[in-house]
Length: 252
Image 1 (cartoon, rainbow, N blue to C red):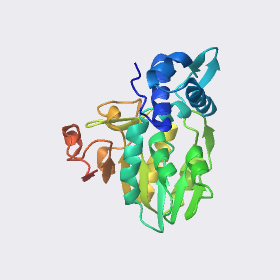
Image 2 (spheres, rainbow, N blue to C red; image 1 turned 90 degrees about the vertical axis):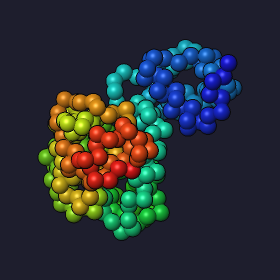
Image 3 (tube, one colour; image 1 turned 120 degrees about the horizontal axis):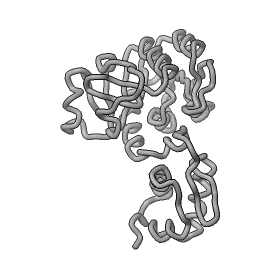
């Protein structure tokens, strides 16, 4: 029986990508039956997932590409990331200067940003590509060493580039967030760039989906008190946010 036949193509592909991450493979016939659409539609979905780097083709279906890379993570929690981006957009004032980190959560904001004259500095190669040439947006890409895992630029040159800006708002995400430990990352290189963005900004916004709550990664990053605004996919009154209210003034 079709479980998700009413999903639009974007939501269906996001669901398929999450299934690939969990199970490692998708069969075309099974996918057509489960999502309640024609096999030709599933083939187009599969083509999109292959082009995005999430999967590779095998006889009768797809298998996930190895590694926790940007292309895979971009589809994971796609619905919550879209909800977060919708909340972030009103925080951007016309003619302001903002920073976007290289996370997939903040990349959703880059995809949604249009019609507002704004200057943007980012170390995210995908975010810069998305923003470059867009009406009203003046996009700056930091220098630095290319990091494949996050499709980003890191290192001392990336940090130095960020330090040249006076920013109104820095939009950051994190690998993990814990009420006591604060935010944490898997690499020291990403940590350094995020700290530089926070130091350069008048307002620091943490954008994180609820699946990362009460988790810890390898390297301690920023304390919760470094953030002015916490934006999540939850209702602001959700009890799961109570542990963060004393440290972060505004929760959206």
